[in-house]
Structures are given as C-alpha cells and as structure tokens.
Image (cartoon, rainbow, N blue to C red; front, side, top):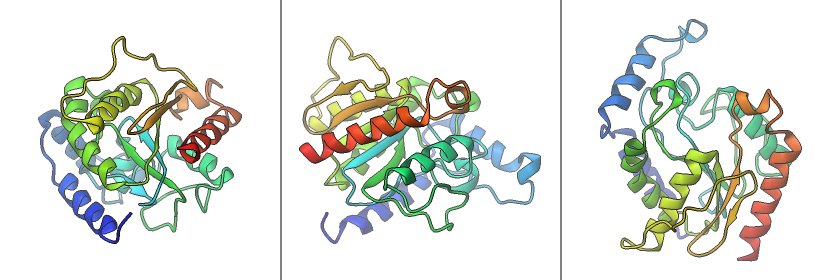
Length: 235
C-alpha cells in the first residue's frame, strides 16, 4: 500500500464513525450506550459505528457479523471485549497473526500481522440480528475499505451472514454492474469461492453458541486460517 493508505483509512474511519443511515441501528446502539450493563456501568461506551482495524498491508480480511452490544459497541474496536473476540484473538495469536491472545480495550497493545478485521454491519443490532437492508446500507463502507487495502487477497467470512455480505462485496469490487453469482454459493465451514478481485473462505462464527457447543473448535478455526493464508500467498 502506498504512503497515503493509512491516512485514507483513518479518514474513512472518521466517516464511518459519524454514519446515521439506519434509524433502527442508531437508536439501539445509543440506547445500549446509555443503559449500560451493570458490570460495565462505570465505563463510557463507544456507541457509534465501527470501522475495521488491523494491518493496512494485510492480505487476509476477516469479515464478521456486527459489533456486539456490550463488546465492540462498548470498547470501540471490532471483537474487542467479548467472548467471540477471546476465541478469535487466541486463534490469531496461535497462528502468528496477532502479538497477544486477547483484547480488552482499544489501547491494550494488540497488533495484527497480515490481517484486517471488519464486519458486514458497522453498528450493534438488536438481538444481534441486522436486517438485509442494514447489511446493504453498510456495503459501500466495506467497498471503500477493501479498495484501500490494496494487498487484500482473501476474505474470511465468519458465519453465513458475513458470507452473504462477502458475496455482495466481491461482486461490487469487481465492478458496479456485477451481481453476486447465481445460484448463490452456499456457506459452509471451509467453503471456498476463488477468483478475482478476491477469494472468499467460510468459517463458523466464533460465537459462544458455536464455541461452547463444540461446533467450532480451535483446530477447526486454525485449519481455516492456515488455508486462507495459503490462498492469499498463492495469488
């Protein structure tokens, strides 16, 4: 990436942080920030949309669902301060993609190596369930973000919702008149969709529902991360 990349990413992050496109999401994220969980009552919540973060020269982009109400919506950084992030950052550290296995706050010293983390929807949604319209309203942010990540080669989609968003993102990056493929490639753990301008690979979301039940294990996410890195390096 050229020397302007990080500055442009920072400017984009400021724009994203001021977004108010989706009234339902605006109302919910701000309500959660006011009516804080008791265990975080003394903390000041972020309560705004979130840009992605990580290594601006990353070849691998991790695309999640949306900020958690009392996780990223509180801390102001994707996957930071919640159980899903605990599992994800531990996996990244095991695989040499992060300098530490946990993340609690924006200033905790976490550094990512070769990875950028983003989400299909930038605001915490009620019930952790964004609508397709909200996903599509966020798509232009993701397109701009990915275009600034000039070395990005693979998008690792965490869950079926992120997979659907990734299909739309891949098509939009290919050109304004390009539509997602039909029939729609099905999501699955380890599912792959190669091709320009970036390839997709699926991974079960590291939510408690998946990690606590064994649907997603450490070896499973490690295998997808390894495969994603191989795909990125082969392009």
